[in-house]
Length: 390
Ligand SMILES: [Zn+2]
Ligand SMILES: [Zn+2]
Ligand SMILES: [Zn+2]
Image (cartoon, rainbow, N blue to C red; front, top):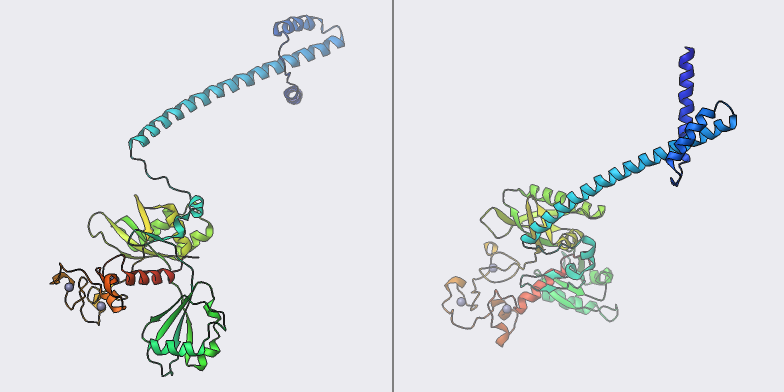
């Protein structure tokens, strides 16, 4: 018992000594190690004689011990340095091999980070089917409709009535466009004035009502998505494999306002294209990413804005399956099917431009033309009725 407690006491003293030694490591080890050993030998032989020699011995031993520790640490450090150097060499070899493989494959266009692209102009414009990019102009839009008990039956009557009761000068209105929409309603558009400020009371007296026009969310096309995925799986992959550097808000919007609508074109093969409807911020993020990842595919993403044109009558806004108009040719505007047109060698005549009152060379194009003025006007209206978050 006695011996044990004595030894444990000694161990504790040693521990205390360790702490002291570690704090007094000599910075320089220039003094001679051998000389100290010699002195130590002499001191030890003399230590029984005087107390001062005893303290000198303790001093020398502590320096020796510190020196030993320091060299030990240096050895460990140099060992670690060797390990790090060897790891670095491995990393360098791996990098060289990756670089070689990368330069062997064709370089993909560099993906902009979301922050970079958000600053760039690419998402401030809308890519239209002709391949051009159009800058959408934010406009205030309202629709004026006759009240249910109103005798007004046509859009022209509604317009005439509105012009009688509403003085644009009086209300500081700067109208850019007044168009018919539907049978008896008209749409007003303005870049510079807030049309929601038109006093409802004035309209009401004339049997009119104001209808605020909610804009639609923009659509995007996603090309080369694996065909075997359901719309739900496409959405799941889009949300989980993309949006890595998106804000929480954009991620939330992607969860809430990203609809996988329908397939588009590309009817064969392992991949297909999808049309999405997304919140403006989600559009901005996805277009800025340039490519989106769905399962194993990196898919191109683009604006998808289309004006619906009927194959039967060439008018806009409905499909031939719902057509209630007479047939009209997309080449010569006469009353027959486009594909059996008997006048293929004649200059084309655009059915829509003729209908809108254009004359001469202005109408000399097919109804399918990307530069048709009637089509461009319709496309512009479509862009202006889409919410690009401007
Ligand atoms: Zn039609
Ligand atoms: Zn024809
Ligand atoms: Zn035309």
